[in-house]
Each structure stands twice: as structure tokens, then as C-alpha cells.
Length: 221
Image 1 (cartoon, rainbow, N blue to C red):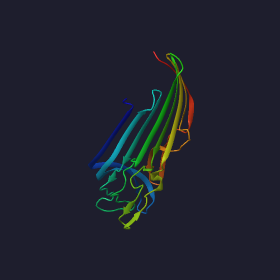
Image 2: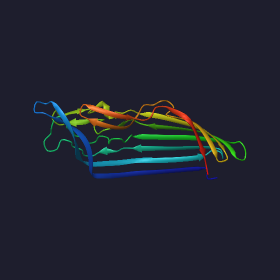
Image 3: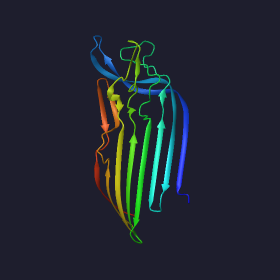
Image 4: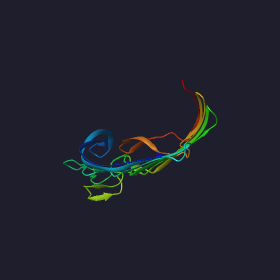
């Protein structure tokens, strides 16, 4: 009865000549930090591949389930920050992950509606999102330091964003054109980053809102 919809897409691509901005330290002749500067790197080549799936299931006329799954394997094929003459702190990032590309992301939602009359309806909905750990900045998961010829696990632990799970819930009562909702977002009060600014010796995170709850009244016309 056309109650199930399933979509799947796979992709593979190569990106040549990718440019990335980063902040570098400005040092005095004696090695003292005197400031910082933003530069643009020609990061070279990037390989992108992944799979995206989507499913929607109407279990009954009043109960629906939906889900999405994404797998990403995005890496730098070639990214040498050192230029012609390597300097202190520069890195070769060949084979490392692209920033803000979690390997997996899962979204699951369920909705149940209860008709209460000709114009009345009560609807309950819950959504869960899981995102695996990811790099906020290039070099979060490994790099080669040419001057010392050593491989490190990370250039800076602050470049890593851990996995996170976010749950949102909502209950909605509809009466004709009126709608009253009671809701809560980030129910488990998860702390996760939505943006950041990196400076030499300093890393500023911008976090998502904490757990929030409230009511919303709407009138449709």
C-alpha cells in the first residue's frame, strides 16, 4: 500500500586545488609569540566518498517512523602545510580526515497521532540524532611533522569533537486552526560544538544551546 519508502545514494569524487584558511603564529627572532595571521593554503587533492540512505515507514495511518543514515570517508590525498621550506609546527596531512566530516550520522524519528474528533488531534513526536566524532580542524587525527620526521596522533586535542547524541521531543494538540505544543530540545543536555575560532595557543568553541523546553501556540489562517 505504498507505506514504505527507501532511498539510497552512493557517491565518489575527487576535488583538486582545494583551498583552506588557517591561523599561524607570528614569532619574534627570539621565538616569542607576537601575534597571528590568517593564511590560505592550497591544500591539493581531496578524495570524497560515502553513502546516504533514507527510510520512511507508515506503520499505520497514525504511526510513522523515519530514519536517515550517512557514511562519509573524506580524506586529504595531498595536503602539505610546509611549503618549499618547512618551518616549526608545519605538518603534512596526507591521508588524514577532512574537518567537519563525521564518518557516520544517524537520524531516527517516530510520530504517533491520536484523532480526538472532527477537528481535534493529539500528536507525539520524538527525534534522535547521533553523530560520530569528527575533526574540527585539519590535523585532528594524525599528522607528519617533517622537521622532526615524527608522526603524531593529533596536532592539538582541541581539534577533536567527540561523538554526540541529541534527543528532541514534542507533544502537539490541534483544535481547528489552533495548535498548542509542549516541547523539549537537547533533552539529555548534550554539550557539542557548532563553530570555533582557532588561534595560536587558543581555541574558542561556540556551543549549541543546552537543554531547552517550553510551549508554542500557533494559529493557522
